[in-house]
Image (tube, rainbow over all chains, first blue to last red; front, side, top):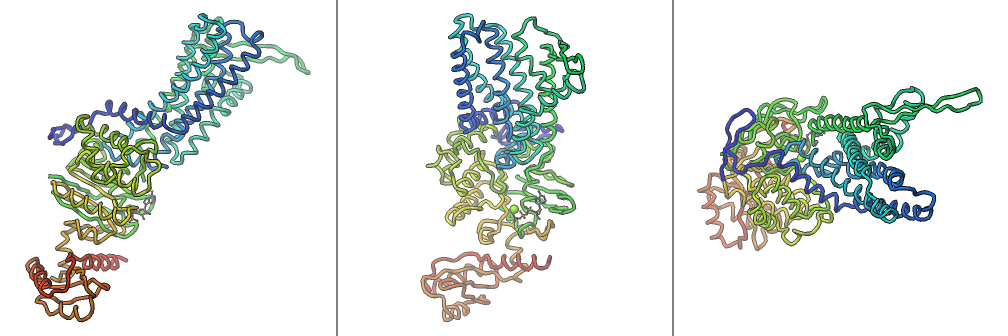
Length: 296
Length: 312
Ligand SMILES: Nc1ncnc2c1ncn2[C@@H]1O[C@H](COP(=O)(O)OP(=O)(O)OP(=O)(O)O)[C@@H](O)[C@H]1O
Ligand SMILES: [Mg+2]
């Protein structure tokens, strides 16, 4: 089959097979990546971790039911919102930590790159696959939480805040995966990406947040772990939907007099904006790095 | 007509020049062998041709399409196998090939037949639905070969395709490459196995230290070097001893007869195909129990060694 094609300079070439457009190639690639992820040992490990966390949680809830649980909103605030950020970081590290570096280190990129696809197709396709696979893990956690909620609150187990919180957690997932992919394309050794993102998201950012609030005494708007707070804040009332933070000061007594402690919590719009900025900026940087990378 | 072209193609790693202003133009249906010692720059050239790495200077073209600025279109009609890529371990060969076929836009109606065909060609049909993770190196390489052929390309770029294969695997790859020549294809294949090159290639390009030494037809290369002398390797069912060699040397046009091992001789003779035909007829008449009669890689080996030595 002979087909005439125009190249980017508008010159005419005859090719036998029509290669699909990049927009069509991305979901095709993502499909096989998802299959790869869902068949991987990591996926099984993640499911096991989530189920274990869910089981421990359910047990503790049941044990202290009378004191701990008052209504569905505060139930999800402490259970779902407390756990989901950890689950998100864990799956992002598992699926994204070696996403790009692994293509070099394991030489699987050489297999893919012999096909007529852009480098960015591989990046975006893998991102979509990692996002959806992580989403499956988040959903499993959500289902366990809802099962608990339904057990205690029956038909009142679905406050709208839970839906909103789920949406915000997806914004957080985008941000964490974006950062993970960026680090992964910074190195050609898989383990660096894993270790760096795990350390950053599990310890680094909260440390930074403490430092910025405690010592610089300003709003830590540049820190992702701060923005992620909206996942839980939507369960509070009143809700600050705005673009600026809620600032509260508490006075406390110290041996030398009265001290003040200032805490910041992001407005919902602000938090989402910060998370989306992380996602966009890290993705642009990661794509840029990957385009220049060589399969030496 | 399929074409492959490099123009002033240069690749530097820091101060080290892996490939030095390579100009090479291959046109039409044929098989070009790409020779050179370890570290000569063969893989570097093939990676540049397939946009795995970027040139420091110069350009390369597949069917006239600049590879660097238009990777998708350039690779659309090319099948590429460089070194030994890995396949996602949890995919089966069928899934891995379907992925490639899918990305290449092979219509879903043809996909299955095509994949079955290439799997059959590389003798991996019975493993089609097992996960690649447990495969041996040679089995994976067969799938890699299949992946580079699945879209029935016009241009095939192979980097030591027989790497990691057992002797039978090597012979099968040779068979596959020979089979590929049946349709109008341009095959550019690097190899260290001179016998393989003599067997399947029409032309050879030799590089050393990143520089092209020569690019010519196999016949010209051997003829120019051997000063009109050709050689063939002959296998006999009986012992290849001095008496036999002396007898062979009496045949018209034969200049020498060398004993390679217990049952094999290398006969050098003057003249072209006509002389070779007469030699074969005379050999049959001698009733030496001749089992095979094939072009020898000996001349190519001599060319190779002397040219490389000259560069050192
Ligand atoms: N990433 C890299 N960094 C630095 N030098 C490199 C890199 N890749 C290749 N080289 C150098 O470039 C030269 C050419 O390498 P290349 O792989 O092209 O050789 P080759 O002809 O394929 O050899 P072989 O027959 O061993 O496969 C070698 O000297 C190698 O050390
Ligand atoms: Mg090589």
